Image (cartoon, rainbow over all chains, first blue to last red):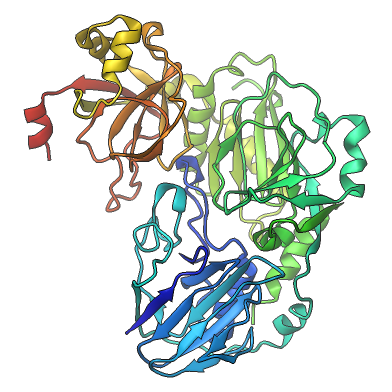
Length: 307
Length: 228
């Protein structure tokens, strides 16, 4: 069974929930940049959360199916069509042999996730199928899908899941303005007095120079006290680093495990998946919450899927 | 360890704690202290992830299983049981055969020229030292080994190469290292090891670990080719 790649889209890779537990060996988690949408796609189809899916970036692919599949598309809306007829996001779509799924650009959000009723066959690296482009690992030869190639799949068991509660949460579609909750980072005290309030009252713009490794922000310069002592420190997805130029960088799921810039803020884990939906020129503002509050929100979010 | 007061535990995120040392503590500037401590903590099965950097360790816990205060308490108890002297004695020595040659050592010619060394001198300077693992990061499994002999210290390449061969051995500043998977890299390449630095069939598939010392052994082309 297989799926032919008629066109690849801007950057379509195979992703699952990533390879946790290897950061000490310099291996980032990777996995879907928006793990909430990735889990949702699998959940709607009745597959385990960690099943490999396709992550599409800004422009989606065109796929031709060799046999019947059920398909679910979540995340950013790239106007998916089957044989030129529009289909719904966040639903189970039935496709017949030789049907063509085509996707366009999205204008809100950055990444879509396509899950299939059969399991995608890909290369396992440290227990995950996730494609890690910087070291060309996982996925298919560690690369984005190529036009003219094919994905092979094998049948798998599906559960029936109820969408009521998760569906409610999904009621809010993506916008081009984001309010992201953050907690203090370890070097928060290095932010100069004059910049402390400004960070939370100003609006930053997502730069073009953004990818799965990180999102660079443009906006008011954040003044950081000189700290010659700064040495390499552990980083995590969602860490907001601030180099001397005062322009913060939000680290993504493929970011390196260690880094040398002050860690001024940390994205609350409950909002981390939204970082995967930031697109160039989007606006972003930050809202400060306590770490205890962030932990409560995270647990609340986790319970959405436990049915 | 005399006192747990020398350690600072703080919250990095909802489920990651940072372990740092008192500024005045004698091991504060010794990066191998943190590597040893991280290897020690990793052996305890309580943690999701233990990542060492130069002067701190990030410990990730399962927030669904233990509370933050319980995690802090547990770490303090564990670091209390850590003895740097004992742990550093148990470091194993890994011998890494390297075929130093222009064939794989893309930068040997350039380095010998700028440093006024013969290739033999260069090979000796690089292979005579037992290096310590200083840090693991940047690329999967990439270990920063040091310190390199002063005579060999050169900056990284101004333009990184796009596709190095797996097992390429490079140098930059006071560090040397091996690219386990090849791929992009900006270090000056001296040669290549036939050793497999990553073996998916092993429980820990990475050959170089935090608590190791590493020494390079020069081998011939014939030895390189017949190595299995």
